Length: 258
Image (cartoon, rainbow, N blue to C red):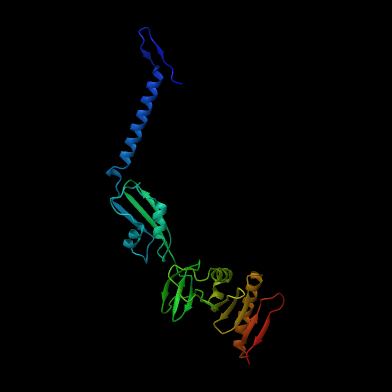
């Protein structure tokens, strides 16, 4: 409530408190304006943009995707939006933007790495551990990584597209559960889209009907036994294994060639 009263000569007299409030508000506004002008002054214009972690993607390409450029105010952009713009590139898994000092921006990227290969027409699709296709090769020189085939694969696969995340996740869990020396004797994982199961083929041609991920630890132990049987049969010159079915509980079903 505005309190006022008239003096002896009829003049209106207001309390000093209202004047003080106005002064405080004015000073606060001037302070905010000064801070705003200071933060948007040329002192904070970016003079250097660093790109860290890039190997296959050029620095220039990363910066262009970010939309950043020297001269921009270091507080004048949204780092989340810039990071998302960089991550549009199929080779880049994630990006992080960091403001350093007052004139430098650091863009830290994590490029996708080949985790598995998927035969596709006359090419190989390079996928990372999330199933994202980020490159295509006409030959492979990469050792000790899973080769994954499928009953059904999309007719067209674009870079940045997930090929089959369910198949990737299944193979990844089996691959991680196997010792390195047993990984080396696997020639191919085959994924059945219809029933979501796996078959594993060894380099000696044995088909191991693995099934789903149930009893994974037990199946991994049986897999080691299959490899041992393969080696013993080869040393003895006896019939080779055609397939071993370990999908169900109990003794595996074994069939030999010949």
